[in-house]
Length: 219
Length: 192
Image 1 (spheres, rainbow over the protein chains, first blue to last red):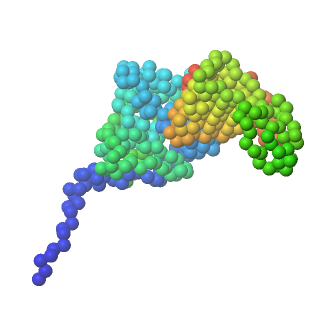
Image 2: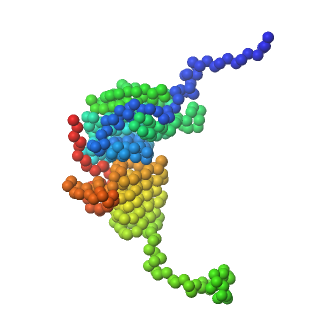
Image 3: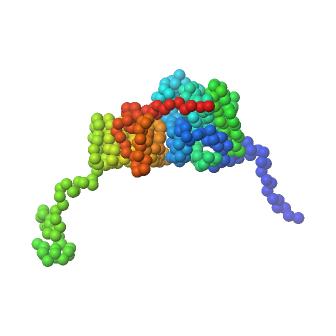
């Protein structure tokens, strides 16, 4: 009779609560929200697109090939570059006016918010959308990615448009790596509705990675 | 002293006395003064600051500061890492590695390097943004002549070339040299 016993398997349900086994990081994935948004852009009308994320040459080239005029805002990096006192809630409208100057009759047909809202306070999201909402047409669509994970990389990931149906992004480092992380606000649909009155969720897709894709537009 | 025969045969010359004038090969004529500088480009050094309009007929490299307007429609403009420009730029090719607050219009290409900070609108048939660059503004990847075409004007598309004009083209896209100027006015699209 052997006294050797095979080691028992670790109990998985304990590990599910550990960040180490959170859903797999987002890499390239099929995006139904992107597909739906691009369907609404008509090249012959030369649509105007606002990208709230960082400038990515590939995205600009892709959208320009669809005859889009692309405006890059890089909101998150612009905000964190400002002094803390300028980023107070009461100072946000004036700050955004300087960071995102808009022509009086400037309108957007599509807005790529990516995961920008995950890195903004509620008041910052509300101030930003209060500034942008008057520039939406009735058919304007905004793509918003919201993470349901407990932590986020301290630096936003960069989403690249691969083609009309697929997105790719830099994968966040695995738990335990040296990359700094920060708590994720985990905004729910009700939070978005509260922060953006006048906009409603037209479509919503939940990815296995824990990312929620929203397509939002005016009421 | 050198052997005149060695010079004629192309042999290496013996070392010269310090301070002695270098021998001039008799077979090679001295190039004309104007030929020496024909292909060189102009450069604005890092300590130089210019306030006003800059125009010319050669390539320009900017390592210093310029405020105003830069018009080199047939040449290249390169802003080095130390360059600080608050101006609208109109050129054939523009490369930015430093800081620019203004609108860029290029007949061929605009490249924003990873060390660049660019606030303004870009108009060119080809626009490249290196990962890591700071950029805020709009991008229109079209020939400036097409963009500047007013209603009713004709454009020669058969030649496949676009010529920039310093008139309405740059004027319609530029809004002074203010950083991240708003995009040019566009008529609202009619929607069903």
